[in-house]
Image (cartoon, rainbow, N blue to C red; front, side, top):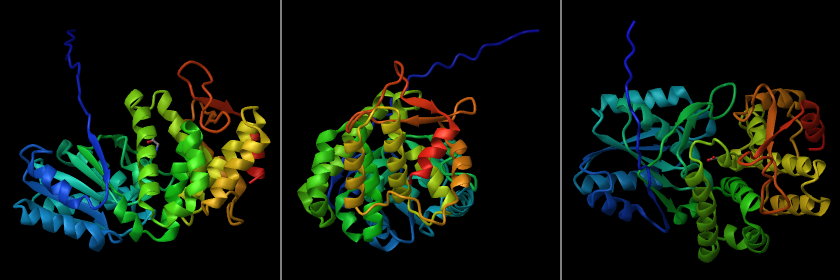
Length: 370
Ligand code: GLY
C-alpha cells in the first residue's frame, strides 16, 4: 500500500472594504472600472422584486452603459424565497444567459438577497467573486458583512451555506428611506443586539435617537451604520469561521431563529430576534449576569423601537422548544446560549468560549415567561 500526501497549505487574503454612504451606485461602477474585480467584464446583478426597480435596474443600466455585459436576475421578495429552489432557478437562468466562471455576481438588496446571492456565487462554476450592495438596515447591520451566506430549509433557517467573503460591501443609507416601516424596525433588532453585546454607548444613543433614525436623520443613520459595521467586522476579523468569539453575534438568535421558523415566517427576522433577545435577557438574569433593571432597560428599548418582546399566541411553545435543537450552536445534543453581562458586554464562560449549555427545562421555563 502506498500513501501520497497532497500538501495544500493555504495563505488567503480575503480582506475587503465596506463603504458606507448615500447613493453609492455610481461609486460601485467607478470601482469596477478601476479594477475592483480585476478584468471581469460580465456581471450578474441578483435582486428581488422589491429592489428591482428601486436600485438594481439602475445599477445594471449603469454597468451596461460603462460597456460591461450585464444581466439582471430577479426573484420574488421574502424570506420564504431564500431556498435551494430559488438558488437553482437563478443558476439555471444565469447559465442560460451564458454566465460562466468569468462573471461576477452583484447582490443588490437586503439580507435575503445578499445571503442567497453570496452562497450562489460561492458554488457557481466552483466559485465566482461577488459584491454586496446593501439596501436595508438589516443587511447593513448584519447580513452583508462577515461572509456568512446561506439558504433556509423547511427545518430551519440558514442550515445550508458557505463562509464566502465579498469583494466589497456598499451600504447605501439613502435606500433606507424606501423601506416599509416594518422592515426598518426589523433591521433595528440587529442594531440593538450589537449594542447589547458590545457597546453601551450605542445602546444609550439608540435610547435617545430612535425617532431621529426612523425620521431618516443623516447624522443618526450614519452613526448607527458605522457603529454596526465596526462591531461586526471587529468580531469577524478575529474569528471568521465561528470557532469561538463569533458566536457572540448569535445573541438572541437561539430562540430568535426558532421563533422565525415556527412562525412560518409571519414574523420578520428582526422581530423574531427581538423576542429572542427578550428571552436571552431573562436567562442572563436567571443565571446572575443581569439585574432586573437592566432586563427592563433592554425590553424598553426593544419596545421603543417598535419590536415585539412577547410571543404571538399562535406560536406553539412546545414546538418552539423542539425547534431550539436546530440551532447550529447545539453541541453533543445540548442547547447552548450566548448571554450578555449587563448591557454592552457578553459572558466569556471559559477562555474563548462564549456559549453555555442550558438545560431544556430551563429554556422551557424562559419561554414560558414570553
Ligand atoms: N449573523 C451573525 C454572524 O454573522 O455571525
